[in-house]
Image (cartoon, rainbow, N blue to C red; front, side, top):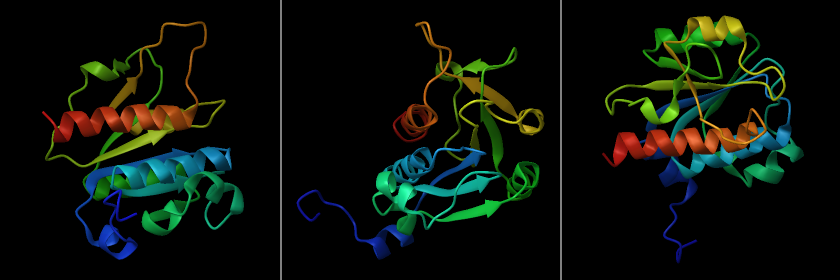
Length: 172
């Protein structure tokens, strides 16, 4: 780890985080949950909020893909996704759902502001983001796609969206 210039767990916990919260809205695959933790660690995301049927650590299937990131990334669980969103709004987060809707904005056209705090909602692998959550969101974003499928795996979507936000917030 020293050769890779990685920080230790305590240093990571105390370092300044990217003001983004990942919200997993009933994500059913524990591997996708683990992947979300690993991505959150890689980009020093503030925390993850797990809702509904989304599995929670500790669980060996989550750890298969998290590779220990459940220890470094702060997380909390809410039974209700609507209550989770209300709590995040009260904490000053700008709520964004990643979903294909009539009003969704292509990801490349959305410009996050460096001084804002964002809670980005990723939905169930089959049903997407709950419509009640979409209705509570400030924006709905989607990733343009050009093939025969109409969606990415949620863990791939998380990686694409968070990288896009990081680039726009930190490098521009």
